Image (cartoon, rainbow, N blue to C red; front, side, top):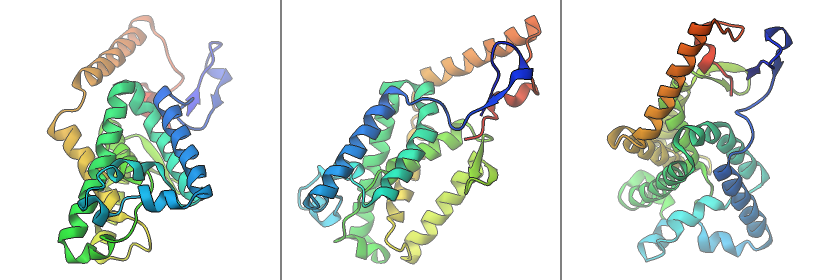
Length: 248
């Protein structure tokens, strides 16, 4: 992400990521890290509060939400929290904290519901029915879907090397999740849950026009900023379309 201090474009600087943690992300990351440490000290928490479709259908509906805050190892929680920060920060700025948290939990729970129903009804997913799924990935994939819809042409660094527009990045992830789910070759990764998060996010945003007031307000403020720049001859040091070209 390129930033210019008040002295002008000749004094440019670069920074990584979308900026400081927003209020909701601070709470979510603290909860995830805290419960990861608790699960490391007391492994029984994972078997009790992880998502096990057989248990959910037997009445443990609380697992549809609690599984999101448990992780298997340091790499698992680190990657999910990094993705939460990279993609969730700007979404919270656009929607507001309350709407962001609502979306996060709805897509996370919907991903768990889809995992439960698919594993209980479709033969290719039968192995998931009695296994335990943990991690925030279902909700994270929902955030990725929202990011791809709101900022379709924003470059995302694939493998931290290759820039690819967000819309294509989401399509690639969706295709991988679908292929791995059907082929049952996930290698211990809950691809059904990932796919459920993507589908839930799409239906929520496209089907119900999620948080339209905040989106309209955001677009209106952008229009006013661009109009003021043209009126007063303010230049940011690059082409006028660079508003959306911050690399995450």
